[in-house]
Length: 390
Image 1: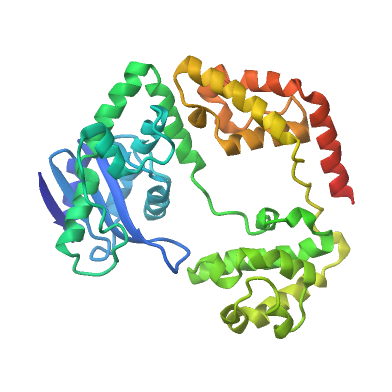
Image 2 (image 1 turned 180 degrees about the vertical axis):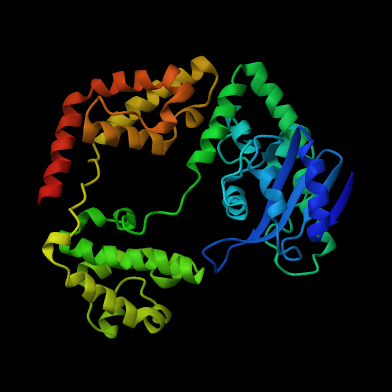
């Protein structure tokens, strides 16, 4: 194999038609995300079983030639642990990539846990050892070192071979189509930017706040979300997550009082203090008619019994079909299902992730198990409704 640097628009435009003729491509990215809101792309690696192409976004200002390749179902593109790569590539292409298959997910379907790294995957399935010394390199610096170039090339050199082995095992187990369905669903489930108007609902302990306090919290979180995007800076550089509840509850009116709030560092007070005081005052001044409704409290500790029952059901189904329980029923799917039934009853549609093949082998059984706890669910519904009314 040969490692080929692509450093001009002309070279990239000449490469893409060749890549589009391939049935399968290995794909990876290197980026830096330390003090920015959006990751800064440092390198794109593509392997076609013959060569590794290192595409340089620092040297090439216009990467639009890659868009048709990324947003097409073909060729299929193999990545490992691809959620952050997808965020980078979606921003580059202006749309979510298609035709993505994740070898980390494939390994999870085969019982190797949800977080098996690329290096360990190669050791486990191919008996290949690769170094990981450059994983935290500065990928925006130029020129790239020889070690960086070698590291980047290795990240796509073995991916097609790894996928071949994993796909064969999935096929032999009769679950390859389920894996591919989950890869497709993953593309729709990659984290989108939250709505600035409702992001306050996700703040820690927001359900403990009264409507007027929620109005202040909404001002703070809306500003933080929009300003972080505008400045391209991490949200926590503007307001730490741990400060939001205290700011909304105590509503300080001076810089010194602001500094007494948890995690309000001197740097944040110095740089953002006057703005935060203005936002707090604006939230306090809102009429009661515009205050958000109180948020429902979380389920009580007793809900653990229900969660455990559903996990038992999923474990049994997983054993019957050869799918690890941690793949079959993720924690967030479990919690979303229970909350939706508590709030809306048994006629509610299940979370999207519990449709498809899970809807055939698992979801009806989960609803049956939930009906065993109908009395508890009704009591918790009333508890959450009372919490919103108080």
